[in-house]
Amino acid sequence: MPHAAPPAWVMLAYLISGICFILALRGLSSPATSRRGNRLGIFGMALAVLTTLLINAPVPDGTFLPQPTPDDLITLVRILAAVAIGGAIGFFIARKIAMTDMPQLVAAFHSLVGLAAVLVGLAAYLNPIAFGIAGPDGLIHVQSRVEMGLGIAIGAITFSGSVIAFLKLAGKMSGAPIMLPGRHVINLGTLAAILALVGYFTQDQSLWVIVAITALSFIIGFLLIIPIGGADMPVVVSMLNSYSGWAAAAMGFTLHNTAMIITGALVGSSGAILSYIMCKAMNRSFVSVIAGGFGANDSGGGGDGTKVDRPWKRGSAEDAAFLMKEANQVIIIPGYGMAVAQAQHVLREMGDLLKEAGVTVKYAIHPVAGRMPGHMNVLLAEANVPYDEVFELEDINGEFAQTDVAFIIGANDVVNPAAKTDKSSPIYGMPVFDVDKAKTIFFVKRSMGGVGYSGVDNDVFYMDQTMMLLADAKKMVEEINKALQH
Image (cartoon, rainbow, N blue to C red; front, side, top):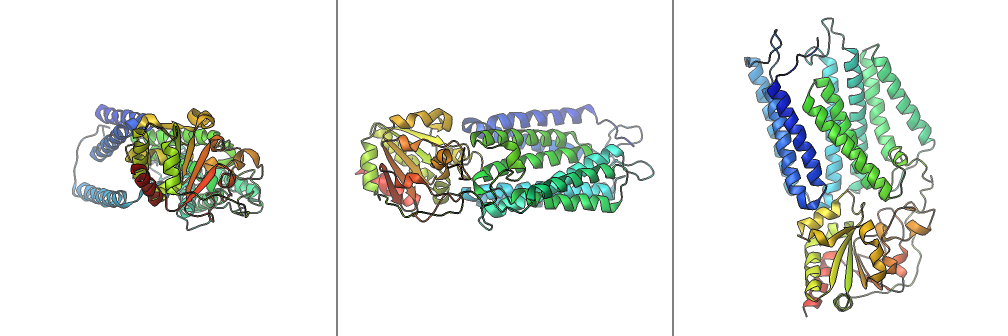
């Protein structure tokens, strides 16, 4: 029995929600408007949830009228209790989570979206009449079977893939690519089997079919993510975000909920576009990355973390303070190490001290700096770094040749010249900052024993114009600030 069309006020409310989501995405595209975009997204989602809660089951003539019964009230109390519990957990996590843990938190939340899609799909399968997707004979409509099968499949892939991404980002699993023999044949075969089962599900709604789709989708999500190394992990986070959106959109069709369809489509399409832009910025093939490291060397390329004993120069906070104060321009390149040390505030103080001395200070942000898209932008915005001092790679890379000092704090892969010269490197082809053209380089890192997240040693450490500042990033910048003040 098809659903009756909802009243005009419901469609209007969902339309307003959709517009808020679009404006929210537009706002989030710039640090200057991100807070306003976030508020619009919150308002849009609150309106969509409230509207959905106010809709009651249709009466025989197809209109929507309030008909509260004791069962309706009990159901409403359960829903509100679930919303309250989930909201409290989310609020607590958001208040307590450190910015350094934000990438793995995002991956964990993506897994929950995927799991929710699977559970909703299974609930609809077990009680299709309650969801309005079956005829009087109890058989699920063919179009609903397609929507259900795809929604469960995408949701399961999102869940298991996000779990692996979380483990890698949290350091509970090696960030190095795990290459299974014959992985491409296995992956393609599993995906083909899932699509074939979804097609068969339109003819036979037996329980074993939906269970097989769910199980194979969980497996392929795991298989797709384990071959992807740390250098591509920011793309994975964005890609899983896209998957979670498409899973929500598919479930929106199953539930006949316009708001879910709109929200899911926006998240899915924006995540896919962002993933494509990031792949382009890294000179990666979008298809290769989402296919699970397709084309990567089974030996892992140059990502074994092997270091060669080579001469290098050690600098001090006093050296850095003196040379930067005498410079005309200093370009600061932040990375994940800055986030770990929570050094963004003292870094901004250093920039202010240098500007007071007449030095031009700029911040260079790589598209994949950190372990999540926009990670560095958020940290610098948190420290109130002026937006007009923050530049993307293509806008500032040509300035290093005229720059006196390049100050690298916690970054590694994004300044590694191996990306331009070493074809065996796992980061080969990724556009990087041309810091080697700067007159002086200060490289802040904890020790010479560590390598980048991709596991590749960095020739910048050993260049003649490089001075290594080996210490905790926050403590080192604090010492530089003291030296600048005296």
